[in-house]
Image (tube, rainbow, N blue to C red; front, side, top):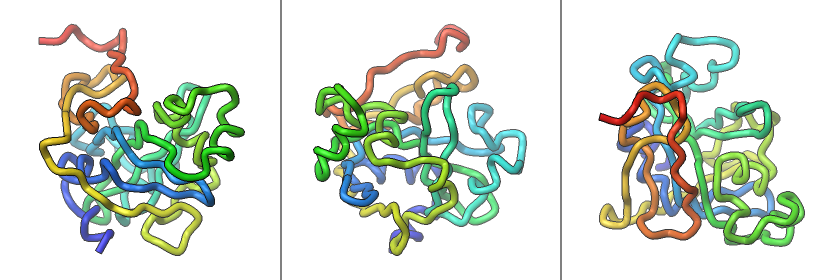
Amino acid sequence: MLVTALDGPVERVAPTLLGSLLRHGEVVVRLTEVEAYDGAADPASHAFRGRTARTEVMFGPPGRLYVYFSYGMHWAANVVCGPDGTASGVLLRAGEVVEGLALARSRRGRASDRDLARGPGRLTQALGITADHKGTSVLGGGPVTLALDPPPAARVSAGPRVGVSAEADRPWRFWLTGDRFVSDYKRSPRAPAPP
């Protein structure tokens, strides 16, 4: 059952989302890259300082979408995981559009097919996910659904997270090894130098 698969430590749940299919309407994206964020135990998490109106959805139950406006430019989406009442989420960083290419292309302008969903803002734009989807469940019956199809562990790579200044070297970015739909790694200029 999907809710059970999401009800675990975020660093274990995150790589199991790779290869899974995220659907909104006629557009389906195969997830190729994700990042884990662990609430109160993770200074890079939006929920690090506790429950707020913005982060309420991150506290569960697992399987809901935490959608937020990022850098004043685009929407980003996390799948909430872990036990109900404890904030954690998996940022959906990148994917490949496998169904609904024409609609995804119309939403993304002149982007190449490779770049339609390669990056968190591009992914939500290709799927048509906005603030209206914050708090909706991906467990079935809602407008956005997730079908788990975890890859073999040998196909998963891990490394530092993208664009965060706190805990930048925590190896909680996971991607399908060698997949051309993974985004480029960019270290935050505000992050301390790596050890």
